[in-house]
Length: 328
Image (cartoon, rainbow, N blue to C red; front, side, top):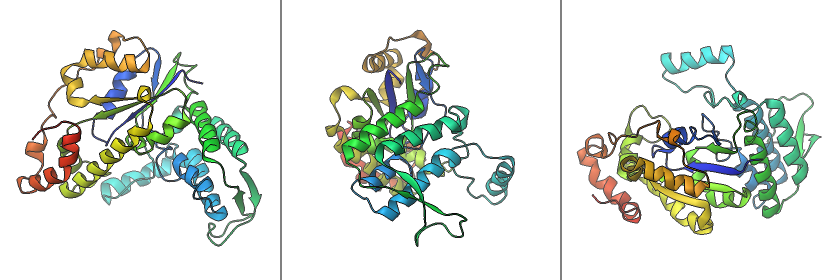
Protein backbone atom coordinates (compact mmCIF):
# COMPACT_ATOMS: atom_id res chain seq x y z
CA UNK A 1 0.00 0.00 0.00
CA UNK A 2 1.12 3.57 -0.68
CA UNK A 3 1.57 6.47 1.73
CA UNK A 4 -0.01 8.87 -0.76
CA UNK A 5 -1.83 8.53 -4.05
CA UNK A 6 -1.10 11.46 -6.37
CA UNK A 7 -3.41 12.20 -9.30
CA UNK A 8 -2.45 15.03 -11.64
CA UNK A 9 -5.50 16.12 -13.61
CA UNK A 10 -6.45 18.77 -16.14
CA UNK A 11 -7.95 19.42 -19.54
CA UNK A 12 -5.11 17.82 -21.43
CA UNK A 13 -2.37 20.12 -22.80
CA UNK A 14 -2.41 22.01 -19.52
CA UNK A 15 0.92 20.84 -18.04
CA UNK A 16 0.00 17.45 -16.55
CA UNK A 17 2.79 15.55 -18.31
CA UNK A 18 5.60 17.97 -17.48
CA UNK A 19 4.54 18.19 -13.83
CA UNK A 20 4.54 14.40 -13.57
CA UNK A 21 8.04 14.25 -15.04
CA UNK A 22 9.21 16.76 -12.45
CA UNK A 23 7.63 14.88 -9.54
CA UNK A 24 9.24 11.67 -10.73
CA UNK A 25 12.61 13.12 -9.65
CA UNK A 26 11.49 13.03 -6.02
CA UNK A 27 13.04 10.21 -4.00
CA UNK A 28 9.68 9.03 -2.65
CA UNK A 29 7.45 9.35 -5.73
CA UNK A 30 7.00 6.73 -8.44
CA UNK A 31 5.40 8.46 -11.43
CA UNK A 32 4.06 6.12 -14.09
CA UNK A 33 5.69 6.96 -17.45
CA UNK A 34 2.38 6.71 -19.33
CA UNK A 35 -1.19 7.72 -18.59
CA UNK A 36 -2.77 4.56 -17.19
CA UNK A 37 -6.29 5.26 -18.50
CA UNK A 38 -8.11 2.43 -16.70
CA UNK A 39 -10.05 4.71 -14.34
CA UNK A 40 -11.77 7.13 -16.72
CA UNK A 41 -11.80 5.27 -20.05
CA UNK A 42 -14.62 3.10 -21.39
CA UNK A 43 -14.91 -0.19 -19.45
CA UNK A 44 -12.67 1.24 -16.74
CA UNK A 45 -13.34 1.55 -13.02
CA UNK A 46 -15.93 4.31 -13.41
CA UNK A 47 -17.94 2.39 -16.01
CA UNK A 48 -17.74 -0.65 -13.74
CA UNK A 49 -19.02 1.46 -10.83
CA UNK A 50 -22.05 2.66 -12.79
CA UNK A 51 -22.86 -0.83 -14.09
CA UNK A 52 -22.76 -2.36 -10.61
CA UNK A 53 -24.50 0.43 -8.67
CA UNK A 54 -27.08 2.92 -9.95
CA UNK A 55 -27.04 1.58 -13.52
CA UNK A 56 -27.17 -2.12 -12.66
CA UNK A 57 -28.70 -4.44 -15.25
CA UNK A 58 -27.58 -8.08 -15.05
CA UNK A 59 -26.69 -8.45 -18.72
CA UNK A 60 -25.20 -4.99 -19.25
CA UNK A 61 -23.17 -5.45 -16.07
CA UNK A 62 -21.80 -8.73 -17.45
CA UNK A 63 -20.78 -6.97 -20.67
CA UNK A 64 -19.02 -4.15 -18.78
CA UNK A 65 -17.23 -6.63 -16.51
CA UNK A 66 -16.00 -8.55 -19.57
CA UNK A 67 -14.80 -5.26 -21.03
CA UNK A 68 -13.03 -4.34 -17.78
CA UNK A 69 -11.16 -7.66 -17.66
CA UNK A 70 -10.21 -7.34 -21.33
CA UNK A 71 -8.97 -3.77 -20.78
CA UNK A 72 -6.90 -4.67 -17.73
CA UNK A 73 -5.40 -7.94 -18.97
CA UNK A 74 -5.10 -7.45 -22.75
CA UNK A 75 -5.71 -3.96 -24.11
CA UNK A 76 -3.30 -2.16 -21.77
CA UNK A 77 -0.40 -4.42 -22.73
CA UNK A 78 2.26 -3.84 -25.36
CA UNK A 79 1.58 -4.67 -29.00
CA UNK A 80 2.84 -7.94 -30.37
CA UNK A 81 5.18 -7.98 -33.38
CA UNK A 82 2.42 -8.38 -35.99
CA UNK A 83 0.41 -5.62 -34.31
CA UNK A 84 3.39 -3.26 -34.41
CA UNK A 85 3.70 -3.87 -38.16
CA UNK A 86 -0.02 -3.28 -38.60
CA UNK A 87 0.24 -0.10 -36.51
CA UNK A 88 2.91 1.30 -38.81
CA UNK A 89 0.90 0.42 -41.89
CA UNK A 90 -2.27 2.09 -40.60
CA UNK A 91 -0.45 5.16 -39.27
CA UNK A 92 2.06 5.91 -42.01
CA UNK A 93 0.44 4.39 -45.12
CA UNK A 94 -3.28 4.79 -44.47
CA UNK A 95 -3.07 7.77 -42.07
CA UNK A 96 -5.35 5.81 -39.78
CA UNK A 97 -5.49 4.96 -36.08
CA UNK A 98 -3.35 2.31 -34.39
CA UNK A 99 -4.13 -0.50 -31.96
CA UNK A 100 -5.92 0.54 -28.78
CA UNK A 101 -3.57 1.76 -26.02
CA UNK A 102 -0.55 0.91 -28.13
CA UNK A 103 1.78 3.08 -26.00
CA UNK A 104 0.44 2.38 -22.48
CA UNK A 105 2.37 -0.85 -21.80
CA UNK A 106 0.99 -1.68 -18.35
CA UNK A 107 2.99 -4.90 -18.33
CA UNK A 108 6.23 -2.90 -18.12
CA UNK A 109 5.30 -1.92 -14.57
CA UNK A 110 2.85 -4.49 -13.24
CA UNK A 111 2.84 -8.23 -14.12
CA UNK A 112 -0.34 -9.59 -15.68
CA UNK A 113 -0.60 -12.27 -12.97
CA UNK A 114 -0.64 -9.60 -10.28
CA UNK A 115 -3.29 -7.60 -12.15
CA UNK A 116 -5.46 -10.73 -12.37
CA UNK A 117 -4.94 -11.34 -8.65
CA UNK A 118 -6.12 -7.80 -7.86
CA UNK A 119 -9.13 -8.19 -10.15
CA UNK A 120 -10.13 -11.46 -8.50
CA UNK A 121 -9.88 -9.88 -5.05
CA UNK A 122 -12.13 -7.00 -6.18
CA UNK A 123 -14.65 -9.34 -7.79
CA UNK A 124 -14.86 -11.54 -4.72
CA UNK A 125 -15.43 -8.49 -2.52
CA UNK A 126 -18.36 -7.20 -4.61
CA UNK A 127 -19.92 -10.59 -5.43
CA UNK A 128 -18.96 -11.05 -9.08
CA UNK A 129 -18.73 -14.64 -10.33
CA UNK A 130 -18.02 -16.12 -13.75
CA UNK A 131 -20.71 -18.64 -14.76
CA UNK A 132 -21.61 -20.61 -17.94
CA UNK A 133 -24.06 -18.79 -20.19
CA UNK A 134 -24.63 -16.09 -22.76
CA UNK A 135 -27.35 -13.64 -23.73
CA UNK A 136 -28.54 -11.83 -26.86
CA UNK A 137 -25.83 -9.17 -26.53
CA UNK A 138 -22.95 -11.58 -25.90
CA UNK A 139 -20.01 -11.83 -28.29
CA UNK A 140 -20.80 -13.94 -31.34
CA UNK A 141 -19.63 -17.50 -31.93
CA UNK A 142 -18.04 -18.30 -28.58
CA UNK A 143 -17.12 -21.83 -27.58
CA UNK A 144 -18.09 -22.62 -23.97
CA UNK A 145 -19.53 -19.12 -23.46
CA UNK A 146 -19.44 -17.56 -20.03
CA UNK A 147 -21.09 -14.54 -18.47
CA UNK A 148 -20.57 -12.64 -15.23
CA UNK A 149 -23.09 -12.95 -12.41
CA UNK A 150 -23.52 -9.86 -10.26
CA UNK A 151 -26.00 -8.13 -7.98
CA UNK A 152 -26.48 -4.40 -7.33
CA UNK A 153 -23.71 -3.09 -5.08
CA UNK A 154 -24.01 -0.17 -2.65
CA UNK A 155 -21.89 2.76 -3.85
CA UNK A 156 -19.99 3.07 -0.59
CA UNK A 157 -19.16 -0.63 -0.65
CA UNK A 158 -17.99 -0.44 -4.26
CA UNK A 159 -15.95 2.71 -3.68
CA UNK A 160 -14.20 1.17 -0.71
CA UNK A 161 -13.26 -1.96 -2.63
CA UNK A 162 -12.37 -0.09 -5.83
CA UNK A 163 -10.06 2.18 -3.83
CA UNK A 164 -8.27 -0.86 -2.43
CA UNK A 165 -8.02 -2.31 -5.94
CA UNK A 166 -6.50 0.87 -7.41
CA UNK A 167 -4.01 1.35 -4.60
CA UNK A 168 -2.98 -2.32 -4.39
CA UNK A 169 -2.48 -2.39 -8.14
CA UNK A 170 -0.56 0.85 -8.52
CA UNK A 171 1.55 0.30 -5.40
CA UNK A 172 3.15 -2.77 -6.98
CA UNK A 173 6.37 -1.04 -8.21
CA UNK A 174 6.91 0.99 -5.04
CA UNK A 175 8.86 -1.51 -2.97
CA UNK A 176 11.25 -2.48 -5.77
CA UNK A 177 11.93 1.20 -6.49
CA UNK A 178 12.19 2.29 -2.82
CA UNK A 179 9.26 4.70 -3.24
CA UNK A 180 6.34 5.54 -0.97
CA UNK A 181 3.85 7.29 -3.29
CA UNK A 182 2.59 6.61 -6.79
CA UNK A 183 1.56 9.24 -9.32
CA UNK A 184 -0.64 9.07 -12.43
CA UNK A 185 -1.37 11.93 -14.82
CA UNK A 186 -4.39 10.78 -16.83
CA UNK A 187 -6.05 14.19 -17.47
CA UNK A 188 -9.64 12.95 -17.78
CA UNK A 189 -9.61 11.62 -14.23
CA UNK A 190 -10.58 15.24 -13.53
CA UNK A 191 -14.19 14.31 -14.34
CA UNK A 192 -14.29 11.75 -11.51
CA UNK A 193 -12.30 13.49 -8.81
CA UNK A 194 -15.24 13.62 -6.40
CA UNK A 195 -15.61 9.82 -6.53
CA UNK A 196 -11.86 9.19 -6.48
CA UNK A 197 -11.55 11.32 -3.34
CA UNK A 198 -13.94 8.86 -1.68
CA UNK A 199 -12.20 5.77 -3.04
CA UNK A 200 -8.61 6.60 -2.07
CA UNK A 201 -7.90 7.33 1.58
CA UNK A 202 -4.70 9.36 1.13
CA UNK A 203 -5.39 10.97 -2.23
CA UNK A 204 -3.67 14.14 -3.35
CA UNK A 205 -5.34 15.65 -6.42
CA UNK A 206 -3.31 18.28 -8.26
CA UNK A 207 -5.32 20.22 -10.83
CA UNK A 208 -2.88 22.02 -13.07
CA UNK A 209 -4.59 24.58 -15.26
CA UNK A 210 -3.41 26.84 -18.02
CA UNK A 211 -4.92 29.76 -19.93
CA UNK A 212 -7.90 28.04 -21.63
CA UNK A 213 -7.15 29.97 -24.82
CA UNK A 214 -3.68 28.40 -24.96
CA UNK A 215 -5.23 24.99 -24.29
CA UNK A 216 -7.57 25.48 -27.25
CA UNK A 217 -4.61 26.57 -29.39
CA UNK A 218 -2.83 23.36 -28.41
CA UNK A 219 -5.91 21.29 -29.27
CA UNK A 220 -6.02 22.96 -32.68
CA UNK A 221 -2.44 21.83 -33.32
CA UNK A 222 -2.66 19.36 -36.23
CA UNK A 223 -0.40 16.91 -34.39
CA UNK A 224 -3.15 16.20 -31.84
CA UNK A 225 -5.51 13.40 -32.85
CA UNK A 226 -7.36 12.96 -29.54
CA UNK A 227 -9.14 16.31 -29.38
CA UNK A 228 -11.18 18.43 -31.79
CA UNK A 229 -9.04 20.56 -34.10
CA UNK A 230 -11.93 22.92 -34.80
CA UNK A 231 -11.43 25.94 -32.47
CA UNK A 232 -15.14 26.28 -31.67
CA UNK A 233 -15.46 22.59 -30.74
CA UNK A 234 -12.19 22.69 -28.79
CA UNK A 235 -13.34 25.73 -26.81
CA UNK A 236 -16.62 24.04 -25.90
CA UNK A 237 -14.80 20.90 -24.81
CA UNK A 238 -12.37 22.84 -22.59
CA UNK A 239 -15.23 24.86 -21.13
CA UNK A 240 -17.24 21.75 -20.22
CA UNK A 241 -14.27 19.99 -18.59
CA UNK A 242 -13.37 23.00 -16.45
CA UNK A 243 -17.01 23.73 -15.60
CA UNK A 244 -17.34 20.15 -14.35
CA UNK A 245 -14.21 20.57 -12.21
CA UNK A 246 -15.54 23.79 -10.66
CA UNK A 247 -18.64 21.84 -9.58
CA UNK A 248 -16.87 18.67 -8.47
CA UNK A 249 -14.27 20.37 -6.28
CA UNK A 250 -17.08 21.45 -3.94
CA UNK A 251 -17.44 17.77 -2.96
CA UNK A 252 -13.74 17.18 -2.32
CA UNK A 253 -12.19 17.85 1.09
CA UNK A 254 -10.07 20.99 0.78
CA UNK A 255 -6.97 19.23 2.08
CA UNK A 256 -7.23 16.68 -0.75
CA UNK A 257 -6.84 18.97 -3.76
CA UNK A 258 -4.54 21.72 -4.92
CA UNK A 259 -4.95 24.02 -7.91
CA UNK A 260 -1.72 24.98 -9.67
CA UNK A 261 -1.59 27.71 -12.29
CA UNK A 262 0.77 26.65 -15.08
CA UNK A 263 1.94 30.18 -15.78
CA UNK A 264 2.70 30.75 -12.08
CA UNK A 265 4.70 27.54 -11.93
CA UNK A 266 6.77 28.67 -14.91
CA UNK A 267 7.56 32.03 -13.33
CA UNK A 268 8.05 30.74 -9.79
CA UNK A 269 9.20 27.17 -10.27
CA UNK A 270 10.96 26.56 -6.95
CA UNK A 271 8.31 28.35 -4.90
CA UNK A 272 5.53 26.54 -6.74
CA UNK A 273 7.12 23.14 -6.27
CA UNK A 274 7.63 23.85 -2.58
CA UNK A 275 3.90 24.49 -2.29
CA UNK A 276 3.13 21.26 -4.13
CA UNK A 277 5.41 19.29 -1.81
CA UNK A 278 3.80 20.89 1.25
CA UNK A 279 0.42 19.83 -0.12
CA UNK A 280 1.54 16.26 -0.77
CA UNK A 281 3.26 16.09 2.61
CA UNK A 282 6.80 15.46 1.41
CA UNK A 283 10.04 17.38 1.77
CA UNK A 284 11.13 19.55 -1.14
CA UNK A 285 14.22 18.18 -2.92
CA UNK A 286 16.60 20.03 -5.23
CA UNK A 287 16.27 17.22 -7.79
CA UNK A 288 12.83 18.61 -8.62
CA UNK A 289 14.55 21.52 -10.37
CA UNK A 290 16.30 19.36 -12.97
CA UNK A 291 13.69 20.24 -15.59
CA UNK A 292 13.61 23.97 -16.25
CA UNK A 293 10.23 25.27 -17.37
CA UNK A 294 10.02 28.00 -20.00
CA UNK A 295 7.35 30.40 -21.18
CA UNK A 296 7.54 29.72 -24.93
CA UNK A 297 3.99 28.34 -25.09
CA UNK A 298 2.41 31.10 -23.01
CA UNK A 299 0.14 33.23 -25.20
CA UNK A 300 0.37 30.88 -28.17
CA UNK A 301 -3.34 31.42 -28.88
CA UNK A 302 -2.51 34.84 -30.36
CA UNK A 303 -0.76 33.23 -33.33
CA UNK A 304 -2.32 29.76 -33.38
CA UNK A 305 -6.05 30.46 -33.30
CA UNK A 306 -7.27 31.96 -36.62
CA UNK A 307 -8.17 35.63 -36.14
CA UNK A 308 -11.63 35.15 -37.64
CA UNK A 309 -12.43 32.54 -34.96
CA UNK A 310 -10.87 34.08 -31.86
CA UNK A 311 -13.95 36.13 -30.90
CA UNK A 312 -16.19 33.04 -30.84
CA UNK A 313 -13.60 31.10 -28.80
CA UNK A 314 -13.30 33.94 -26.30
CA UNK A 315 -17.09 34.21 -26.04
CA UNK A 316 -17.41 30.48 -25.31
CA UNK A 317 -14.63 30.51 -22.73
CA UNK A 318 -15.55 33.81 -21.08
CA UNK A 319 -17.08 32.30 -17.89
CA UNK A 320 -14.06 30.02 -17.44
CA UNK A 321 -11.55 32.76 -18.16
CA UNK A 322 -13.25 34.82 -15.47
CA UNK A 323 -13.41 31.88 -13.02
CA UNK A 324 -9.67 31.23 -13.30
CA UNK A 325 -8.70 34.91 -13.43
CA UNK A 326 -7.42 35.13 -16.99
CA UNK A 327 -7.79 38.45 -18.78
CA UNK A 328 -7.81 39.05 -22.53
